[in-house]
Amino acid sequence: MQETPMDRREASGNKIPSHVAIIMDGNGRWAKRRGFPRLVGHHAGVRAVERTVRAANDLGIRTLSLYAFSSENWKRPENEVTGLMGLFRLYIRSKIDALLAEGARIRFAGKIDGLPADIQQIVRDAEQRTAGQKGLQLVICLNYGGRQELLDAMNRAAAAGEAFPLDEETLRKYLYLPDIPDPDLIIRTSGEMRLSNFWLWQSAYSEFYFTDKLWPDFGPEDLAQALEAYSGRERRYGSV
Ligand code: FPP
Image (tube, rainbow, N blue to C red):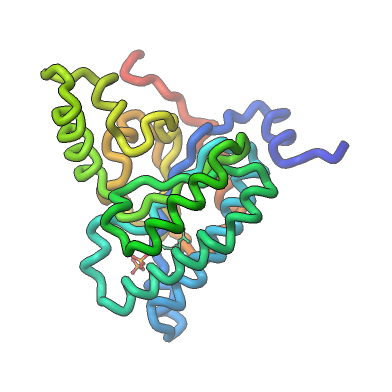
């Protein structure tokens, strides 16, 4: 049988993170350096998404989450927001068949009801059609903000009549995707070193990996390098 990258990693004793989360940054700079409008960078970013999803699958990562559009990204110029929404429509619609064929499941985290109505429908349809699949779980964070997620969770817990003060287990039930594991590894591209309101609750014990690569240049080797760095980390979760 042919040896896969995952077999090689396991044979070398490397730990494979179960959930890898990525802050895909640098599309605008990538385009600017080439004299193109920012949207060209986002188009190139979609190709990097495609490469990375394939690589994550090959490496045996169970959950891959991608920060595609934050609740603050609405402040961008209108044509950029419209262009990004167009890319999300196209990407989600065109990927469902491939995800089904690979046994992958697609899910979304964020304030989905704040997105254009047709995208809400596309999102629901993609989630429903891939719901039973047991392979890679791809989570697209769309109109996502960590503070908003926590506010939504607390307000929904109150509306559901939960007893206050809340405990962690109860609050978690009201997060956008309560059943996914917390990210083991959070990668951010483009040399920026901040969390930007991503997975605020879930990142409490995540490991971080930063690379200067701009997102459109990110590929399987970069993901493998991040995993290599992760496998050398000692996670103590507050103990000694
Ligand atoms: C940040 O780069 C990138 C975004 C806000 C958009 C991310 C979107 C994609 C990668 C494309 C589509 C994604 C999916 C899941 C289909 P930036 O524009 O802030 O770059 P800059 O900091 O260089 O300006």
